[in-house]
Figure 1 (cartoon, rainbow, N blue to C red):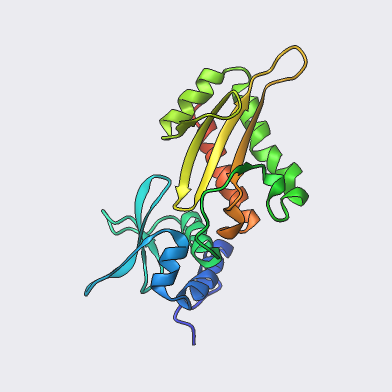
Figure 2: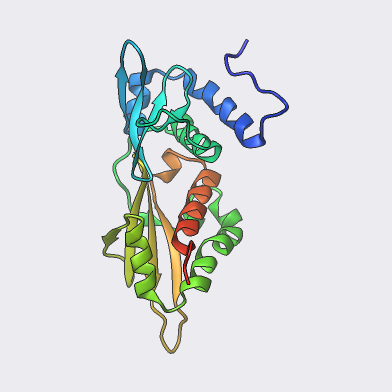
Length: 212
């Protein structure tokens, strides 16, 4: 019988996390650490994978496969548990850093692209419009790394092998301003397309939060 019993009171997200834990449980820890770009440490009292998630230290236990803040030992919220487990269960290879691509270039991305643009690019444009400095300041506030791309771009390392790029192109007499959240072309090796979409939605939420 499974160690991780699902019950009717769990949210769909929690139930999905339990399913993903089963997949991670079957993987050999050292090999999995290599695939995910994490550090596996085995100790007498605790063992797990150490890595940064949204720039913050996280420990994913290799016993119960629950992600925790190593300073407080508190479990992360359900959405973050699910995203980390998607990453650990989906990583296929330790690919080198790739080039930037649009969401539509990911597996199945073309099918969902219209919806994706609606809750990422269009929302960012609605909030910032031509306030490029405001956009850049917000990117810096969330530790984005300035990168040469478009008219202005910031790189966000979300997971060890998953990075997002928030980029803008200034408008002119012929074209309106535009904003995009791009992915490295290795993203398909580490997350399903819907997982990539969720991370981009999270980043969008951070960038437009408390903006006036």
